[in-house]
Length: 105
Image (cartoon, rainbow, N blue to C red; front, side, top):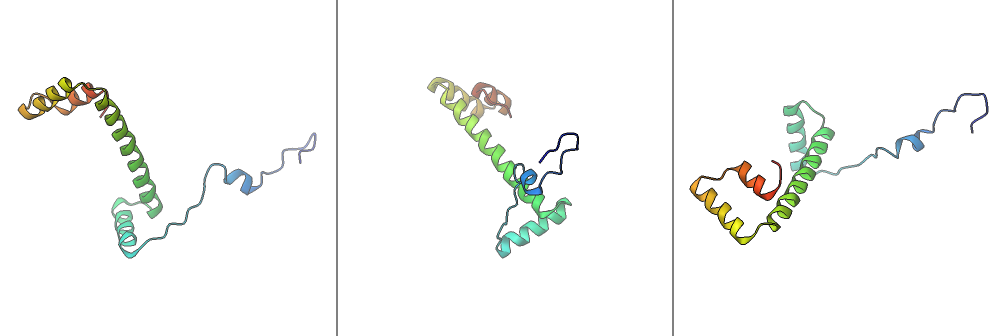
């Protein structure tokens, strides 16, 4: 409780901590445990950071996939045919495809 003329009391740790971050227990099998250990060693990071990176990478990839799907839904059949033919004959590269789908690489 705040008393007039006195500094604010220290926040209680559970009120301050649980709003922004949450602990998570991850159960692993031998294969995942070995992979996490090897990746952490190779990357010079903690096993927790490896899991964090993997989840965020997957999240970004799924958002990108959704953007591509949304862009491809806007293509007419003629546009789609032109893109396929451009890829087949080498006149259409990844940037041109992304531009036509209205997505960024």
